[in-house]
Structure formats: structure tokens, C-alpha cells
Image (cartoon, rainbow, N blue to C red; front, side, top):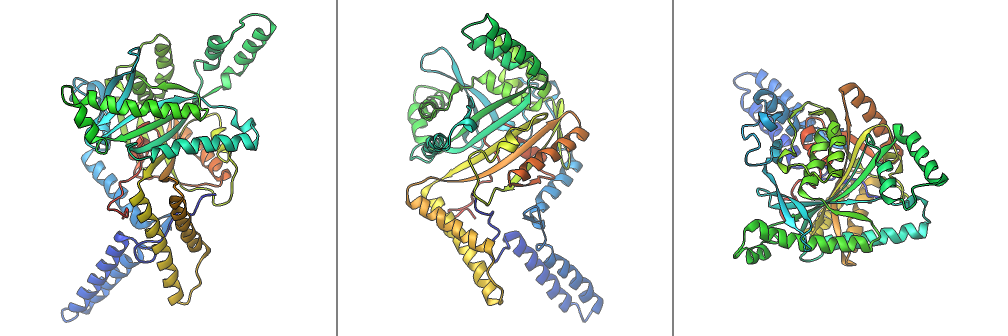
Length: 494
């Protein structure tokens, strides 16, 4: 069971932008009264404008007030006028891949760094953003038949994963965000057949023949499922260690040493939690993962190259072209639409509550959970802020003679539960869940997105299409870069 999304603002349910609209309405009304000696029609006109401004913050669409749509609307209009919503990369880019990765929008500051492993046999790929001071790494994990296990075994697995999440909040961990990305796509190259050939001990006899026949019959409808854990480290928090190791070596080498130590420790914790993994992605594998999200038709080619140990040049991770529309993003060989799951189940659910979404076949889908561990100070301030807002809204309703709603009571209880959990030593996170559907054309995309959103409703979730923000939504929901959470301003996250 998840708490309801907080609706309380600074005053009641209204935030800073809403209060600015009210102030502008009062200013217009005051100006109208001042202009009465000139003409009474000034008061009428400015009064109507003030009424419209004052009424604008009240309606809510998809869990957000209308004022929350101002920024994407203005950004879309500005991009249409300046053509900033159109990106041309690869050979069409001015840099022509000579010096850096050609990625669209805010991703332009990412670059790939190869970090040698302790045994010297391989490398770990880091995506370093010099502007945001973060370094990301991706771990490919394997699923297990958890749904077939008993409730006791499922509970033990959840406890083990909880211990892994607690390590993200540990002092000195340096984790700024982490992301779970589950990608589903048609299995064009029949990964199941390759897995059987690689793992099978006996490759002859009736059992082997029956297995091959089963795989061959299921191949046309087969889906490949990949789950990645992406961890973003805050290079500012690790600055002292990096500076001490930078003497006599380059900064990238120092960053690699500091981050790799934490990655290996995290991988050991994941192994102890009985989660099987293939290891941290190499730079070329990381680049191929990003590129195949932009160009899904190239996925079979990269599978063949990976089987021959030919990694992609990290500079080729970006798309050749992207174009942002109001409700979709066109990129290379496909078009995508991303929804934000703004309400999670409010009733108690079982461990497999996302099964209707994860088990859906016949479409190309990416489900992404992005979380940020909060430090002790921010977590405490956030809980106090939520409790104060909920209690303030309840007190305001009582003054007006209106009863307190059940939602406000649950919001106040959620703030109290967060405070108690932190007092017990539990880590506190803030998180967003995104679902991205990718299709070859707009007509197919609309049909498949409707189907996917119906699955979300079956899982007791509510979603909204991020209109006007589809480029940023795709970067957050489909790319393994642990993005999608706006920075918390101030101690209390205001």
C-alpha cells in the first residue's frame, strides 16, 4: 500500500505559482479601481481578467493543477519557434562525433569513461556528466521465478532487496539516484535458443530435441526481458576522495577508482541478496543500450556484434535525429510516448502487483523506477513539511466549517509513518515511476499505449501522458541514466 500523492501546497493546496496568479489578479483588480475616473470599462475589463487569473489554479488535470502545464506549453511554443525541439546528430552534427558523444538536449554533457576492473580483464563503463557532477553505471540482472515461490520465500527476497536499498542511504555511499529499468522487446534473434545452447549440458537425445522444438514454436511470439540497475554517484559528495587520488593521475582515473570500489561492493550486496547479474556494463555495452533505445531496429545487429565481442563506439550512443511533438517523441526508427504514474496503489497489494504490466506482450515497453535517497536532514524536513501542509489544510477546512477529508488524513498519516521509519533507522526515498511505449508509427503507438495504460489501471495505478515534455520524459523513462527527479531546493525541498 502506498500513500496518496500529497496535494497540499504552501497555502492550502496552492503552491508558489498559484499564489503568483492570485497576486496578479489582485494587482489587476486594484489597477481597475484606480482607473475608474478614466472609464468604468477599465474596471470591467480588468475585473474579468482578474477573475480568470484567480480561477486558473483551481482545476486539476491528471493529478496536477493547470499552472503545472504552463512550463511545458511555453517550452513547446518556444521550441516550435526556435526549432530547439529538433535534434540532428551523427554526421549531421556540427561536431561530427569528433570529440564527444552527440546526445540531444540536456544529455549533451554526458561522456563515456572506461574504468579497468581489478583483474585487468575487462572495463566498466561510466557515463559522466561534468555539468551535473554525476557518474552513472549500469548492471544487467537476471530475473527469477519469484512468482512461483511461496509467500515466505518472497518475503525473504524483499527483505534482502531492502538491505540493498538501505546501502544506498549509507553514510559515504555517495549515491545521488538509482534506477530500475525493465525493458521488453520482441525477441528477433531468439535469445532463448542462444541461452539454451550456452547453458545446456546435454545437447542430444529426446529431451534436447523437445526443447529445441518448443523454442522454435514459441519464437514468433517470444519477448525478451532485460532488467538493469543504474546507479548515479554524486561526484560532489565524493570530491574529497577524488581530489586526494587525483595527485599524480588524471581526474577520470581518480573518479574511476572511487566509483569502482563502491560498484564492486554494491555488486557483492546484490549477489548476497540472491539476485543474479552479468556484471557492470562495459562502455560499448552501455552505449549500445542507449543507442538501441533510440533506434530499436538496430537491436538485432548489436546482439550479433555483442556475441562476437565487438562493442559499440561510445560516441555512437546517440540518435541520428529526434523530433519532439506535443504527445510523442520521434527518434530514428521509432516513435515513443511516456506516461508518469502519479498514483500508486492505495490499497494493500501483494508482491506481484505489477504483474499485469510486466507480463504484457506484443509491444516494446520500458518501465522505469527512479529513486533518490534522502539524507537525514532532508528526510526529516520533508516529513515535517508534509505534516505541516496536511495539518494546515485540515485547520483551514475546519475554520470554513468543512469536514476534513480522508485524503488529508492519509497524507498526514503518511508523513507520520515516514518520520517513524526514519527514527527506526530506515532509509527514505523519493521516487517516480515512468512507462514508455515505443512503436514504429503514431497509429500503432496510440493503440499500444491505451493497452498499456489499461494494464496500469488493473494494477491500481493512475497515469498521465506528459504532454509537451516527451523529450525529457523519454530521457527519464527509457534511458539508463537515472534521471527524472527535479532537484530539491533548500533543506526542506521546497
